[in-house]
Image (cartoon, rainbow, N blue to C red; front, side):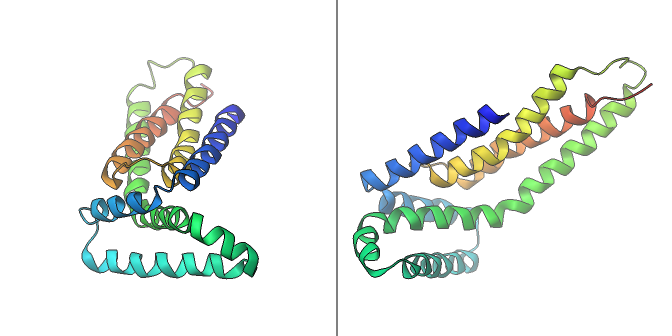
Length: 178
């Protein structure tokens, strides 16, 4: 599990460095706005736009003046992309939480209906389920900082599928005493 987090942290730094060095933040932000318009209503999108600008201004306002002048020109768009994606992820959290609920309900049903068939839990499958659930925050952080375009709908589908199967397997293969 520690290797997964370490690998995710290394990739996160690499993605942030790529966002800053290649100056692709402006194009990514425009594409993210266009794709988010398919998921969120116009009122929510307008609020996100104002909030993103306010948070970005606040982050650069905290920095001392010499750093602000040097960093703002290069990193403004990259920071704006990461803030927008973080706020968009915050709005999509209820959909992801429903995936955990569905996975736990399905896992409880599968465990109850197969109780007589399962004589011993599988530690390997239980560990695999824990690792799968541990990948969800890593993937969300990578999406926030990745210099690639992935729509919010696809993100919810991927993370929701991982959450459903991971939660189900965690419940079905949890250690028990008979």
